[in-house]
Image (cartoon, rainbow, N blue to C red):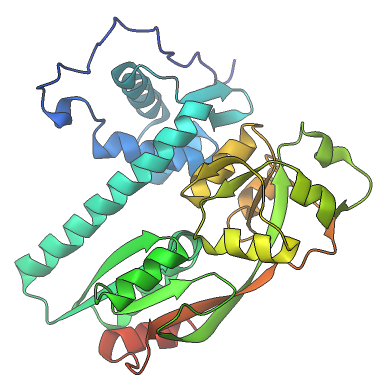
Length: 320
C-alpha cells in the first residue's frame, strides 16, 4: 500500500456532535484552523497529499493527520485517498470552495495589518475574477513587490460582475475581468488571451469519443459550471447561443475542477486552470467544433480615471 492510501474519515467516524460545540459555542471551535484549510486547498490543487504537504513544508504523516482531524471535526469525508493520489469527495469540493473564501479573507486581514504596522507609504486595492486571481495575478504581484516593496496590496476575488461593482463603488483601484464585454462605466486594456476547454474525468464516455462535440450536444448536456455573472459562464453561453444547463453551479474555478476530477460530470474551464490535471490524465480535454471558446482577459478601471501610481505599474507588468 502506498503512503497515499488510507480510509478517509466519514460522517460516522466520530460521536455525534464531536467537535461541533453547542449553539452558543464560539465559531473558532466549529471551524478548522487556517493551516488545515490551506492544506485542503493544496490537496485540491495538486491532487496529491504528499505534494500538498511538500508545498506547505510539512511531512506527509502530519498532513494526513491534519486532514483526518478536520474530517472528524466537520463530520464529513473530505478526501479520498488511493495509490494514484488524493481527490476531493463531493463534500470536500464544496468545503474547499468555502475554505478558499476564509483563506482569502485571512490574507486580506494580514495585508491590512501589515500595512498599518509598518505605516507603508502606498496602498493598492485589486479586484480580480477567479481564474485571473488564481493563475495570473500572483506572478504579477510578486513582480510588483520587487519594484515597489513599500506597496501594500489587498486582493478582492470574485466573478466579473463583482469586480465591476467593486470598481464603481470605489472599493478597488484596478480590476481584472474575463467576460466578453467591458462592464458599463469602465475603461479597459487587454492583458492576455485565454481559451475555455471542455474537460471530464477519464472514465466519462466523452473521454473516449472519436468525434468532436457539436454545439447542440454541449448545450443539451448538464455541465459543472461557474455561477451566473462569471466571465467563464458568459463566454460559454455566448458561444452556444443559448443558456448552458447547469448540473452543479460553483463559485470558484478550484471547486469546478475538483468536481470534474471526482467524476461528477463534464465541466468548462480556462485552459490556465487545468494544465496540470490534463498532463497527469486526471482530466481529459474533449474536442469541440463550432463553438468559439477563446476570450480576452482585461484590466479595467472607472471611465476617465486612468490608473496611476502602483495601479499603473501593475498594469504595465501584465504586459511584460
